[in-house]
Length: 242
Length: 242
DNA sequence: GGTCGAATCAAACGACCGTTTCAATCCTAT
DNA sequence: ATAGGATTGAAACGGTCGTTTGATTCGACC
Image 1 (cartoon, rainbow over the protein chains, first blue to last red):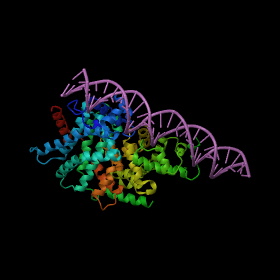
Image 2: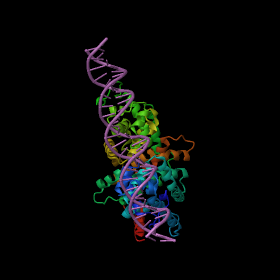
Image 3: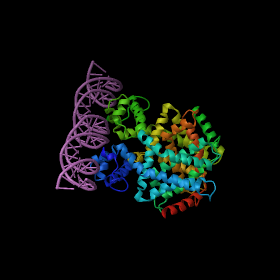
Image 4: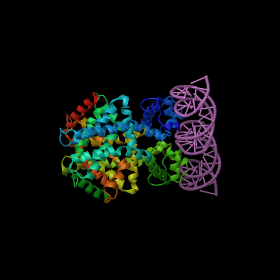
C-alpha cells in the first residue's frame, strides 16, 4: 500500500526501481502486447523482484497505464501548447490546416527522435493500444485524448469553416487512425527499408509522407454524392442481385 | 492426426463441429484478441469438447489462421476478380482511382453486410490482426495480401502515371492503414452513434465517408517540398534549439 | 545508536493455460 | 451385422500466470 504514495527519493517522483520497471515494461508491452507480456518477464528484464510491480504500481493494468501516461501526457500537453502558440501568433492570420497538423505531428516526432524520451518503442506501443478493445485501455485513452482532440477539432473547424462538424469529426477520426496505424506499423519499417534504402528508417520520413496525404483528405470536397459513392451504390446493387 | 484431412461430411469440406468452433473463435478472438482468448472459452461457447480444437485444427495458432482464411481468402479473391472485370470493361477507357477503390471496398462491404458471411465481427478481427506484431500473424497476413496488393498497386499506378512508384507504395500503405483501423474501430461505432443517430450504425456509412477522404489523399500533389514539410523543418529546428 | 517506515526478497497461493492421452462412441463400408 | 477409422469425451499433464504473504534489509531522522 505504501507504494501508492510516490517516493521523494529523486526530484521526479519516481525511484530508480520504478523507472527500470517502466522502461522494461514499455519495451516488452510494445513487442508482445499487454496480455502476452508477463510480469515475470518485465521484472526479469528490469532486474527487479517480481513483487516490485504490485508494490509500486498496484497491478499489471495500473503499470500499463503508468507506462502510457509517462510519455503520452507530456506529448499531448506539448501538442496543445504548440497549438496555443500558433493561434496566439498574430503574424499569420487565421491558422492554416498545415500549421495545425504541424502542432499535432511535431511533439510525436520529438518523442520519436529523442531516444532519452523513449523513442520509437513508445509510438509503436501507442499504436497497438489504439487497436486494443480491452475496456480499461479504451477508457484510459479516451480520457487522455479527449481534451486534446477537442482543441484540435475546434482549430480545424475554424480553418475549414465550410466543412460540417459531422464531416470534420469523421476526418479527424481517419487522421488519428492513419497516424496511429502508421506509427504502430510493423510493416511500415519494412516498407521504409524496401522503398528508401538510402534514407535512415526513422519516423520522420514516415510522417513527412503522411502529412500531405492527410492534408489532401482533410480538404477534400464534400462527399454529398461523389463519383465513388454513386459507383458504390451501383456496384452494391449489382452485387446484391447476383 | 486424422483431423488434418478435411472431412467429406458436407459439401464444403468442414463439419458442423468445425464450423461451430470457427464461429465461436471468430467472435471471441475479435473481442479479446488472440492471446487473451483461451481454447476453453472457445470450446465452451461452441458447445464442443476441449480437445476438438487440437483434433480438427492442430493448434491454437492454426485455428486462428483458419478463422482468418475462411473470410479473407474469398474477400481478396472477389477484390481481384472485381478489378479484373473493371479493367476488361472496354467502355470506360483507363480505370479511374474511384473504380479501383470501389473494387477494394465493395467486397469488404458485402462481407460486413451479410450476417451469414460473418459481418462486422470479422472486419474488426481483421483490423486487430493488422496491428498485432506476433510473427505468425504478420507472416500469414503478408502472404494472404501480397498478390492482391500487388494487383491494386499496378492498377493505381496506371491510373496515376505521374505518381512515382515509391510515393504510391506509401499512399497505399496509408490507405490500408486507415481502412483497417476504421474497420477495427472500437471507436468508430460509437462515433457513428454520436454523429448520425438517425443512420443505422453499419459499416457502409463508414466506408462512404472514408472513400472521399482517401481518394483526395491518393490524388494529392507531390510532397516534394510542400508547406507542411517546410513548416515541419522549421518547427523541428526550433524545438531542437529550445 | 536505536527506531520506524519504506523497500526488497524468496516463496507460495490458487487459477488458468495449451496440449496430450486413451477410452468410449459414432458412422460408414464391407 | 460387424470391422475399422473418424470423432468425441473426461481427465490429467507440466507450465505459467497475477497476486499475496511474511520475513528481511535499507536508510533517514530523533
